[in-house]
Image 1 (tube, one colour):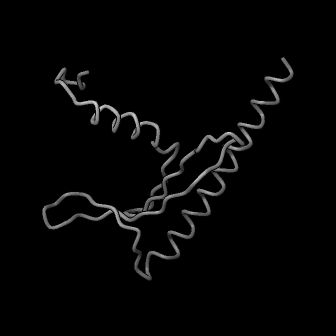
Image 2 (tube, helix red, strand yellow):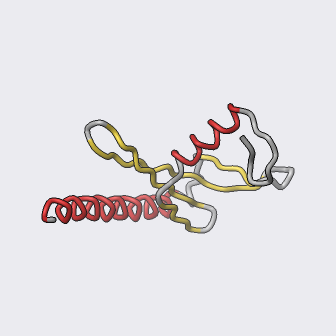
Length: 106
């Protein structure tokens, strides 16, 4: 197996890439350094959703990192982002419900 540049990759690297793609967020909302990622999880009993709040920052080497720790000044902004995430999840649920209804009507 090879990567995008046609370089060989190990089986572990290939499995890691597949896992990352499977765990990719279905939506990401931002407000400055604050971010909420939405994930869809398919189960035997249906679909569930998860929200992952985080804050981006740069470490001493200049590399972008994520943390779940928020300052008191970030709390209200994050609360609003989470509320928007909740609304977006409800939109996804409505779309899923509508597509199932459309399939049954065909």
